[in-house]
Image (cartoon, rainbow, N blue to C red):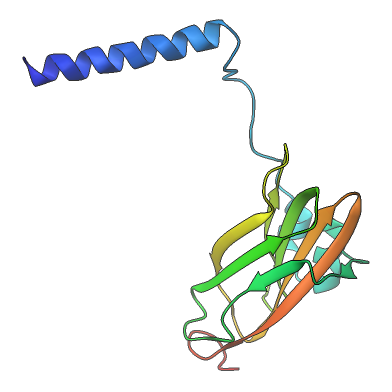
Length: 156
């Protein structure tokens, strides 16, 4: 059988399935799945300003938040960070690098009982605390870990 014909039939079948789902209202192409950009938070140059924009100014310390990052980062351009919230009902996690020019690094929103877990790589200008701000059950919690940067930053 002709390979081009198979590929064409598979593509046409998939497009037909999507068209039926859109017509049935199962897919809404006009629905935006991304949250609005927090311009004030991501452009803030002071830690207090960034915390205020995400509602993390009065966050309580929690041992139920695990911040996993290396004690010493060999390259400040790519520092692996994992955050896990064991607090039930976690709705968002924000990642802050306290001494970066713009401290607010990223925010993640969770819905429908999603697991409060984030794994990413961040750029660190120099040694700093990596802080997680977690919102759960209408309250705000925080945890931090000190990371020393040896290359790619100011050397400590």
